[in-house]
Length: 179
Image 1 (spheres, rainbow, N blue to C red):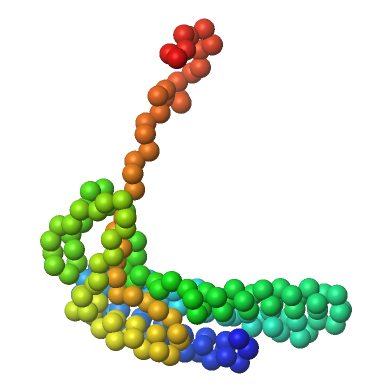
Image 2: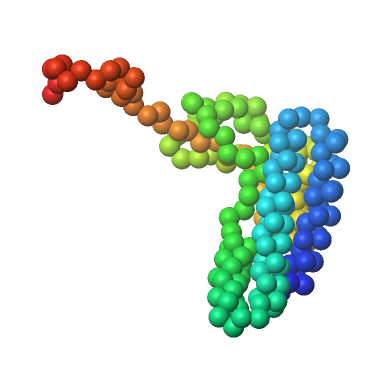
């Protein structure tokens, strides 16, 4: 990606960030506000990555020492590959985030309780709960090539077993070992 392409994407992302912020003002539920905040965070993270990429391109062009320029060019090549890999092959972002639950959750679409097993469960967030964000996500996907899904993911974390001995108890070297 050239610095011009990265700069154009930064400008597009800034416009979408402003649009998402403006749309957030009309949200009537916490899930929609969380979703808007998550989209803004994704756009900010990608803008920072693109700004770092532009800075590295400029550093390579400014460097006069041939050895340092080769080192920077090699680093730029690695960053280009990483950026392209994450940009084109990256997993879509879940706008509702990932949430740890103990046994189950209430589906945002149906209002019915659902049990969570050992695998994460992704639930689509209805467009009416997102307060207009779905249309903006579609435009972001087309203009910026960023896939952001209107889903929320629930997963169950198995509790760690309690230790056999309280670690805060003082150690007694004369005590009998239970095994």
